[in-house]
Length: 609
Image (cartoon, rainbow, N blue to C red; front, side):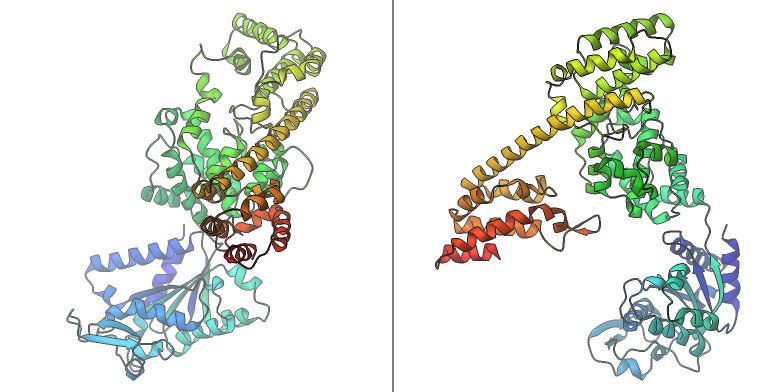
């Protein structure tokens, strides 16, 4: 697809003194670097194969300018690339290098006999690229410079473009620039780039890629060989996402291999599961890497799709996600599971496989294990007699409050409403709603109502099945009733657990169990603002009566927890703990009142700071 670019580069390399540079442009992650690396590799291979010696006359020096803050850093990188050939007949070392300070020593082959003849020492304040080459040399143009990430350098635009201009116009080097030109133009407020382009860049090419071919290269280097994998899954997600970022795909493939190593091979043998599982994985992985989809936006229910599409309308989350990605089985796993996989790389193998094993996709494979409500969901697989038997069983269980798990109760309600409105069941929508309203206190006594929070978006329900006709108004009313009850019970349970966490934490402080404290603050509760629920007075009492050694260890654990060097999702870690600030302010006030002029007082003052 980019053969015209390769042909133009070949023509450029054949010119004697072109006195202009080439620019290869494209969006970030579009494959520009992959293209030029592949070109250099093929060019060198073909020349070596032809035995013409041409490959010895042309040396590609590729330098990424990403993050560089001064042009001396470019010189340094070029020096590192070139020093193995400085003794060749095409290069001549002149006085500038030899006059440099003795800071960096590099062994050189002075006479080209492949033996180390001596050491050149240089600092890069005095190093100039021209020192390597005689101005009279006719061979210096055989060094081809490739500067990547031009738009992402921190060097002043005038300085870096002036540097490149000097190489092209004054030293007559051939230069190929790799950049996202859109970004260069966006940041070109002083028209520096515009003038540079007009003067220095002879031809500009926009990189275009046939994604399937590049994907083959990625999969060749990182094969997903543990399953019967269909690459069209990735192609479909890539095209629907619309970001054209190959780097994200490459990273996602590597992450995918790690994830699949945790999944039971028996599950991976189910093509239906694997296809949908990987589809959702690549969708969430690409969206998160693009930067629009944050962890909190998955957890905060209806924010998910607003992030994916920038849509601020107040409508169902699933409406947008199905529109963009057309998910057949919803999101397969629970939201919390995907958050751990995508953002935390925290994949508990046992928990993950237990959740997967409980999906309808696997239960349905064994007719004896398939519950009646699930038979109704897969109604098309049954004849009338078997369907009627399952329907009667579901209605009877529903009347007798057998469906104690809230997600299952919602599935049953949705199915009964659907089949009544289709004229197949005589059990009316009014009876369904009335029964739930009258019996919800009795039904909701079970643990699942407290432990599991129902998701608002209707798709993250952990069964792998969406609720039947979830847009139905009558079902949505029942959904609201059940979710409200579930939310109330879940919040009460959370408060009890927070209380238990605080009591346990104080007990372990009493025991000076630093191992437990460390695990809580740096691993188990690493990203939870647990101190926001703690009582400062009780904590202060325990804190001031602890040994100095324990105070020191607690101090270290908290320093790690709030470290400015720790990041998640591009945010400094302590940004996740804003809710805790009142606790620490109140504790600080209490510590001020209890200051003393002894060693314990010093430890507590340090702790307060």
